[in-house]
Image (cartoon, rainbow, N blue to C red; front, side, top):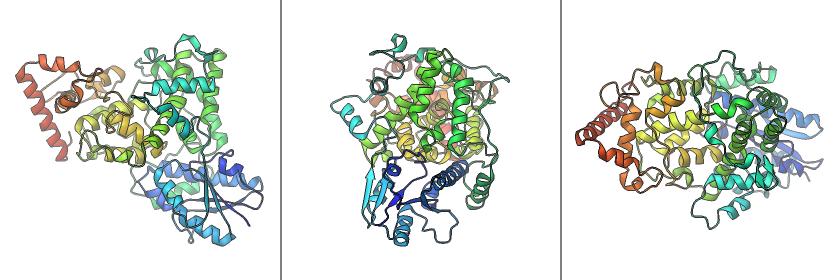
Length: 507
């Protein structure tokens, strides 16, 4: 009697644990379903990327002689959910059991657990740290800091290690990686892929079925199979890795990619493995093709932050994304969906997100995330926005990044302090402020940068929580040394700005 082998849209890995179990008479089930395409209003580029990649992955499995039951979104028999498609295929093939690699999101794990047929969920061993390993690392620790976890991953993998010591004598080279970038017309851009027939058909489908989702579907230039993903990896290693480190935090309004790899969509969907990507970067350093701070900074993003975020997501449980430690309840303003704003940094960060389904980590953390936190926006709404608009967003990685690191809504599980700043940080790391209607040097008055006003207003609102924090508490001394009239003006102008923001005015 055949069994069903479930392969989800972010599990497009030939060495997937469920696929390793497949026998000759088993049926591999893959399905484009509306429940997955619409549980949030995903960017149309993300939907198109996953559907095209799924179709090509199914095609590759069939070329190996495997039986694949594939359901397209517009199939009239489509049950439009993963459980309903599994039940339909089980009845069709007389299957006795479902074998699945554990999904990366709690809602899907729960949905599979509720299936009325036998189901075996296997660990997703594409990650370096299992749930048990992360739990063992976290047990008994007062603070779950990523840096300490990252060092364990370095030791486990041997990446950039010299025996039992880090290459170069340091674990972290962040102090070398905070340089602003200059516009450069000769900077090499990421590869662009013209849609083939499969991708073109998917683009037409997505255009017809998701016409109102935020984001521009075309032009669509992402790779949609492993061969293309490997080309993107090779291009990054050869042309961009060496300067990735120094400029990874920089932002330029006319250069959305700079030296970033744009590999996260392919890693998170399973077309590339995290270890092969990191090994390529370490090899480039070993051969003198990339500086150490660049290779280390890039590898840390993957075996450090990526693995750590997954560990936090599963350690903290299904209610994690509902946390709201600061009690923020403001609705996310329309500017996050492209409504006009006079803030040039947000105009470009949101516009880039709309056009490319992509923004790099500092744009997400210190522009869109920083503003939402300073303005007191509902963290769950912020979480859902990030999940909607980015091609690489899945709840296991996006949730802790937003709820924990960006919005401090978990009360300090991920971050030891809130990542808030005035306009000075954005001015230092970008060219956004030069073209802004506001003046970053103005602290009060009609031309004052809203980040300046909201920064102090945020700290004043939450003084009881943060005054004793050793990483941020000292700024209250600066606040206290201000004249009383100045403090009052800042609070009043911040309140006026937020009132206009709530009223839907183009602030």
